[in-house]
Image (cartoon, helix red, strand yellow):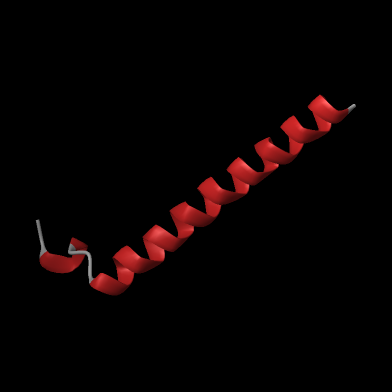
Amino acid sequence: MSDDHKMTKKDKLVLGITLAAIFGGVFFIALIGLVFNLSS
């Protein structure tokens, strides 16, 4: 293995933000869908 695959702090930050955005987006869509289903 070469050292090219080492994760820098910036890479970890970008990955964390990306995962948080995906998780947050899915969570909010599910939450909105749940609210609409319960209120109808």
